[in-house]
Amino acid sequence: MTGLTLPAILLPVSSFVNELTRQPPEVTSIRCAGPVENSCDKLSALTWRIPNRVRGQENGDPDIVRHIHDFSILSDYAIRHPAFKKLVIETIDNDDLRSLKISGLPLKTKFDKMLEILSSEVEYKKE
Image 1: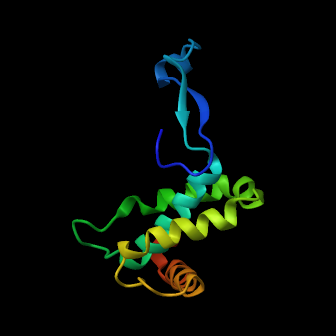
Image 2: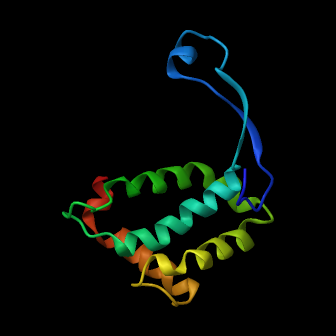
């Protein structure tokens, strides 16, 4: 696995069928990004994708809310990790050019913009 800052973790991979029938996983071990790194990616994605989202268009990005739910599940663990703050800042900086609407803005301004959109757009509450 390349591109990870933190060590990969080893996890099994199992189909729903094997889980429901209580069979062993089809893949006993595969290298995966850990919850801290995954959280950083999710938060970065929210930071640039929410300001970029244009509802009602073909590429309106309706799946973006999955990052909100995923980050919510991972956040308690990730935020306590000593590398989280540094890694999330680096991740957001590396993604700076993904949104021309927020590119070059200070980190706090990016977060403020994302949070303002999340709290003011009624559709996010429905999603």
